[in-house]
Image (cartoon, rainbow, N blue to C red; front, top):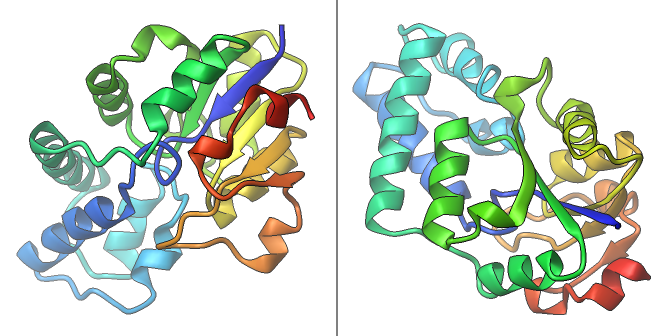
Length: 212
């Protein structure tokens, strides 16, 4: 059977603004200074990487673990109140699960991945899920996709991605890449050129599009 590996943030969940606000709150609460480039700089960074950015670039006087704990707690609170699923997200997962074996390769922390899939009611649709905190390097390095392939027992797969770093990561891991650009943080033309197929939204993600 063929394999499809979803990204989470920006593909299934419209979450970048929630991440952004959670990090901004931690920075402001602890005397750091947010910069105009911080949001885009951290897109795709793993949970090992972006706390270091908060410390070294934004001046937050906490440890990596303390920053992670504070931001993840804020994310879980927000998601508990409102899960910002993108239109067609649940349906796309169900549609793909009917025809393919599914994996997930995400920059989100493990507790966030598990909460989102549980709230969506699709946990059992995924044969393997990987957080980039479980590999050496975050996106755009290929590690998270390589680990997803390993856990799935797959030689290759189709990746569903939205971001610059995500497209580059999946491409570097040798996956067939379907790009569904996030309107808030669209990928660069250079990254989009690496995608094998571009779709306007999740409703366009059909079994025929994957098999193409």
